[in-house]
Length: 458
Image (cartoon, rainbow, N blue to C red; front, top):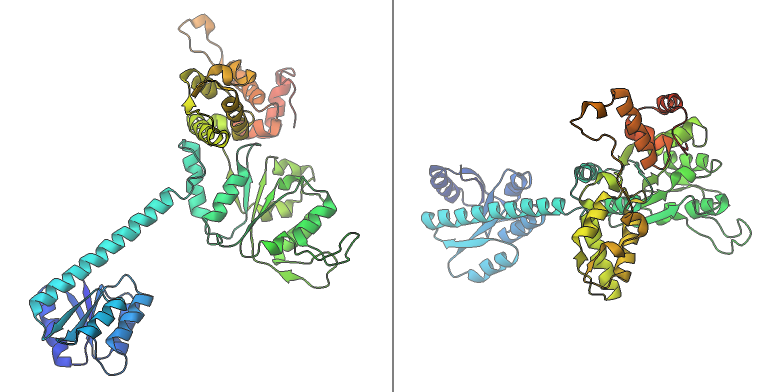
């Protein structure tokens, strides 16, 4: 079926004539003798194209056209006007009408005009859908990466962007947790609001409380003026609590109450003030372990951890290392006005082989150094830091055709556990997460290896 046409024409016989012809051509038709009656089914979505007379009692055709454009811009409008009254037709076009036909109506011409209008509407809808697809495809462009872990992250971000649920971003230091929080804000319905960030480990307890909740004038020594605090400054936007695991234990109850009640009381104030923010937190610590050890409140943990995003370390992202490295080359070469365009094959191999314990932050620093030192248009192996040049990958299992070199499964497990522990710099909590076992199981296995865990730490 070509589409559903809604007709607004105060001459009922004219409506019947047009409707009968259009139905024979396969259209679905509804007609009304007033613009007011016709507008309701149009705004409810029961219309693909509107056909309206210009001069009617009550609401005019131009008024109807303006209301359709304001409420259903996807519905093209064709107006009917008497021959010789083209100035009114031009006014309708200016009001947003797609086209016009003159009276007396030639049904063949009317059919072609409506067909063009319908084709135009379908084309506009396709453009809209394609534009939305392009926007979605490039929604998180600032988070460079084509690896499977990054595509999983993009999918998670896409699904939660417009939610107001609290988000906890976890991951090793240097994985880009604040960058992800900023991307989440930019792609949310709160993007017109402010993105405010605070590092919970960088301020002492009293200053952090004032930074978050604000204070009144004279609330404490040196409080010469009142301050709103980040909860109120970020109202309508996003508040990013970085290093939430280092939030002082004494401050955590007040933070919990603010998140539960959605209001805060500035230091020295008598009244509470409501706020509307989305809270995104981040940590490189094992908060579950901190809860067990009573260094972090369990109720606060559940409040901030409605949705958890676990950022992949750089060593698991494969060739993303080279994508990021090239981006950093271009950035630092532009900043320093140096003619460096890329990375040599040898340097690329070294970058791919390295384990990147410092993640993206370490890669950025390495490339900035290399751009500053290189004498060529491409970064060479000698331009890389010593630790990257000298790094040799540890092979957990080496395939062999010699049966004498094969080892039992328990030995394979032992080697792999120790390899993971070494890769995460002895962090047992992180190693347990990587291995997919609980920490008690990891401790038992390490004890059975006779303390072979080296300089392991919790």
